[in-house]
Length: 106
Image (cartoon, rainbow, N blue to C red):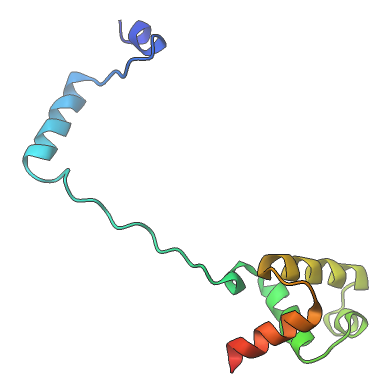
């Protein structure tokens, strides 16, 4: 019966669950709404640790070649990280990224 009612689009709740729900609302346990989870709107927190490291070096004026050498990674990998940083922070250039970080630290 429950399967046929579910297939017909009806909600099916067992009598035991219905009793528990009614009891919870009668005792006030079902009326409190939990607070929504905190939403972190700061885009800097969307960066990976490596992206943050690269952003800090960009802000110091390091080139992609210098970043690759200092971090012991390929220059192409640096370019990908820089693209991700710019996208995540909604910026269009390395200069904007450097200014963004300087503004956060000042």
